Length: 153
Image (cartoon, rainbow, N blue to C red; front, side):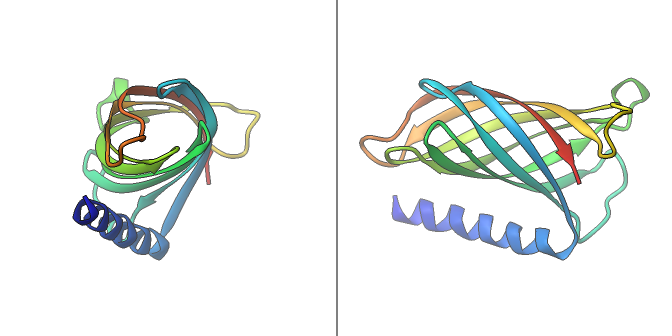
């Protein structure tokens, strides 16, 4: 169990170091279900030390607080290059969290850019869904989903 946490922490730490090289952060409020209603904040960074073309996978780091606990996820996100789906970012990843005990999770996520003329920053609407599994006896286990609304900087 400690090896799994160490490996996930190493991956998340390396992705955070990459994200600091050329940060493209976003901040969102989120609400959803994770064993109970969970509302909170999420900060996200696209790790862009390299600039893959539109339609390529980009590594991401998401840090969040909701439902009385913290979580961190590393994932890969695909930027759609189709005209009808332009502005869609979809991907998946793995992460760890702590809400009463440590848990791991696998998740899929999608974010769609919103065109809000009154805002100077681009807004987005997103959805995260996945399954959490125990890393400790009292940790959360089960399906979760969260809707988020945020701004990119």
